[in-house]
Image (cartoon, rainbow, N blue to C red):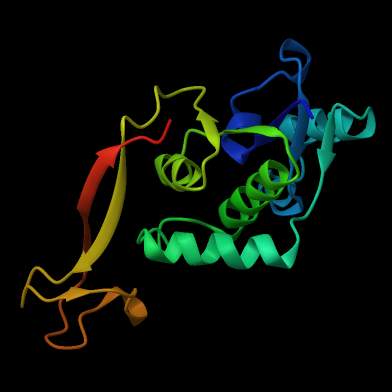
Length: 174
């Protein structure tokens, strides 16, 4: 199969032009919903969808589950929206179908997970990440770390607002 480009909301807001890249272009329903109703970008996106330049596709549940697992393992659950997770799952599915897949997004958390999933990524307004991170949640008050996000982002031990920090940095996957 050929090249597949999966477009995030940020790519569409920045004016990504499908005609300039030789590939099949995809996005997910929740990305379309993130663009405001009366926005000119929504009209541009709808035009690209209606003309067949962009295909809107939902990922299979198998890929959604696998992607959610990876997002959780990397500590990115609090940083990614449902649209981001859906977008990454579609990228993983297209890769699984044999496409050379690239996610276009300026969101560093999306790029971080895309790298872990073995997907290419590209930013439009940003240069993109240089290293892959695994994040941990910690309490600056009692210094405890948590594997899973805590309810309301508050430490259950001392009540301090929790923060995130990288627990592991490594070079990007090739």
